[in-house]
Amino acid sequence: MAAGYKTAEPLEYHRSFLKENCRPDGRELSEFRTTTLNIGSISTADGSALVKVGSTTVMCGIKVELANPTVEAPHKGYIVPNVDLPPLCSSRFRPGPPGEQAQAASQFMADIIESSEVIQTEDLCIEKGKLCWVVYCDLMCLDYDGNLLDACIIALLAALKNTQLPEVTINTETCAPAVNFEKRSGLRIHKHPISTSFCIFDDSILFVDPTVDEEMLSTAQLTVVMDEDDRLCSVHKPGGTSLSAEKLQECISRATTRHREIRKLIDKVAQSVKAAA
Image (cartoon, rainbow, N blue to C red; front, side, top):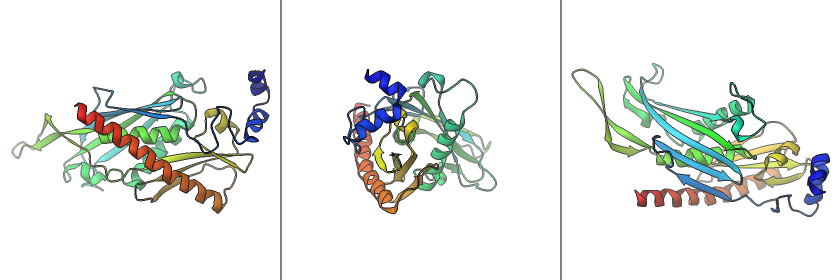
């Protein structure tokens, strides 16, 4: 009976739960789903991480390549994020070129990398004007049940912390680079941006970590990105219901608390992987 009601009247179905200040999956409005993290699970990548936020699952693999820096920025390398939403993760997505949501997620990741300075591209320069690193960050969603951006940010940050760059020297006579894969060093992580996503229901009810059903029924969505200095790196709100200053401050406060929880999780898992190596 409940399943039929949910299918026939999804909006009223959710409202019946919200009247009791809870959600269909049993969570309170301010409660996040269980978040789990695995680091270094792809042996062929230079860095990797697998993140689950509830059922939403994202894998991030890092590959590094040598390249020539641009003329405009001879002292900088590159960071190239890409988010893939294949049909295997949800029936909502179709084979073919990246859809609008995948493109928007990739651009969001690129914007956060730049605005937060998680990695400074100057650190990726090997020799000014001649050689630098390109860091490819491939994020694939394996199971989609809402809140994609939060899962992607956690996966990216954990994978970057797991990335090891091989030692590179340049022959002074031939100017050819020599790569020593036996000697590696980690990327320097300057900041730890972590996002917290919210949905607004019926123009007034605010809740965190939305499922895909909640996203589809919401009147607005919001993602707040904070770093470890409680600095607001980004507020991403793609249209929808406007948000009062009071509600926005509430979101920022919750995002600050969430940052500490996820940072603690990443550090704990990273340390256990390092200890086991």
